[in-house]
Image (cartoon, rainbow, N blue to C red):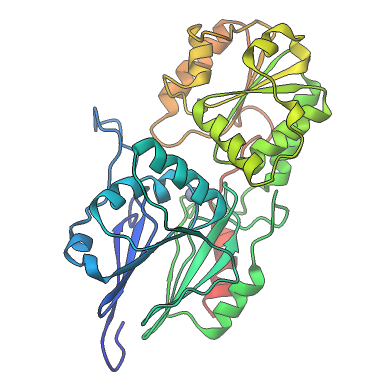
Length: 382
Ligand SMILES: [Zn+2]
């Protein structure tokens, strides 16, 4: 993009034409702002690799221009690289949504990285630099507190949506359609938006429908429930806990990220009644029909709680034939084999297993399908 004075550069260090390690940068003269700093999870052929990171060489060479890092939401492919970025680059300030900022703080503590300049964003904030003016607009996604970011540059407005879907009956607040429309009215020079469901026709299922389908299953269960879902889908986790409470079930959380998410939900005031929670010992002493084990491992990760339970290697929980295991999830590409291995083991031990493939919609994606994308472009691209 070119103004009469000088050019504005927009580039992707990761996340363009690939799923993961999202990291965009916008540069005008002596200023750079960075949007997101994620990791990519390795494909099956990258043996022994934990994470794939973006190449930060350009940013290192232009380090003195960096004004700040802006985070759209708290998923790993948007925040996972922050400890590495902070180890290599001087980032004066990080703006992040509330839930993402809690996740980032946990991550930095785990990695022993000291950094205190994280500002929690809200929609009224408009951070300004010499060349850039930033605005945030609330979107709906599979983690609370997701935002799109508008950057006014000397050559016009650049908008990045972050990950989003349109859900008219979301769990949690609505997306700020009015602000998106206003930004669209004012004019957008460049819209950066993608979706892993861009090739899927129609609209995605609403989170409220998922909540209803899960409630039906939980209500009908006679024995113990073992439920695995994405820990970062905090609104769903909260609703599962609430449904259990209404059905006289106590909840024991398993797996580090699930326990962390519940702690974050408590600290953000999203969970008020804490009496629903029990320890694994208490869960073992109670009647099965009064217990729900909420755990990680919906992707068949070998060391996660659900895999340990399926293997019979968990120190606290032994699978029982009357257990009902619910996968409120879908396979992330590359994980189907390991998930099927876990499901086979669960069936062999007599458990009933629910997945999205054989029952009602007990999971929905956080990424817009084609008709939602059409709606997005209508409000933003006028
Ligand atoms: Zn996401």
